[in-house]
Length: 303
Image (cartoon, rainbow, N blue to C red; front, top):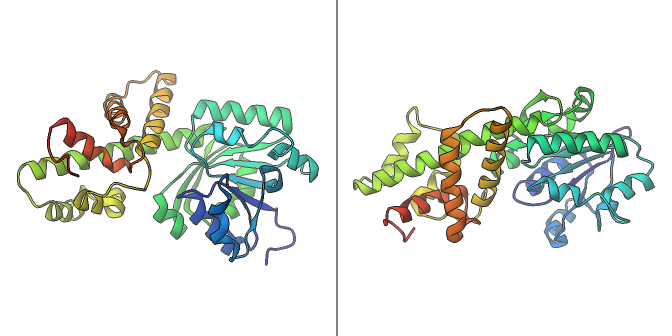
């Protein structure tokens, strides 16, 4: 059971990351309200004791975690009679905390946080996560947080239930900027591995042995450990979508422009993912960039 003085907790968004995070939060926190636009996705959690809200208003709690693709999805939960703001008002919660776990624009979320505090007294933390669904299931996510330091400190006990590396990066938007840096490495890694595996196949090498060699040397990475099988079996369904990877790369390059920086590698990879989405593969896992590279070379299109 939850401790009597603990803040009420809610999670909104039961996608590939939100659902396993909800399971860990329920187990560790003792009580949790969830909301998802497609209500049926919450059914599996009902038997575990979760409270399912019928609307954002019903999900209004002292701390609300959102695990949604972009900031516009978070903003859509706020207005109207069935929105979060109305719910907070009805419950007399004057200084709620709204956590944005999705990967969003650093500048946009910083401005959003300032506006929410000024107009509604809502304290916003941008707290994107990294570690994939495996990290969400195991509670080993890396959580990078921007926003007020005291607000961050008050939510750390919640973050510790889903993450193992939790760092306050600075003011609003700094967590999102840290995630942009993370995504430079992730997108670069999946593209580099795809090129390596394409070259291996083109030269007649055994891709399974190639994967084993990569994992045994300096080229090893969490990407290879979690997703290496995709380059072997050619199954790129599910996982983190290429469409979202492209969204993240757009944020990367937007942040670079703000900092007056040129990121040539990220620009090239952005073009590749734009090509992948335009070819109709945007819903595939981002490792499916292998398909795009293969198609551009007129090879291995059966994968």
